Length: 88
Image 1 (cartoon, rainbow, N blue to C red):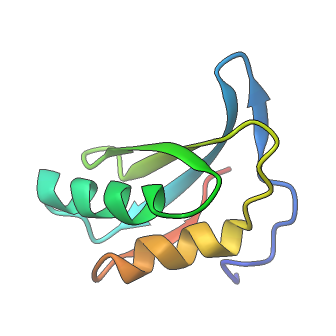
Image 2: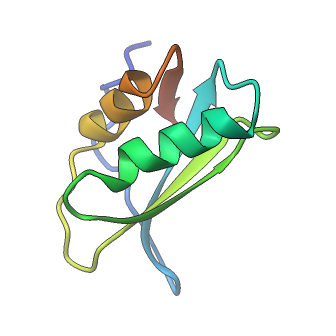
């Protein structure tokens, strides 16, 4: 299964638009901080919250932002030796 096959990944909630990613390869809190920093540097990303124990990152997007999910996955993988994919 390719990491880039899904088209609809944004979820509208009361908290705003967010994208959930599953991340493999994280070992400590520093891993989560590196991933959050990399994601938060992307235009249109309001914040990122990584739970290392759950292996999950939630990216909150600016209102009306059209952020490519492939860019989110690439940012996670650029942060270190991590593999990311969209969560179900």
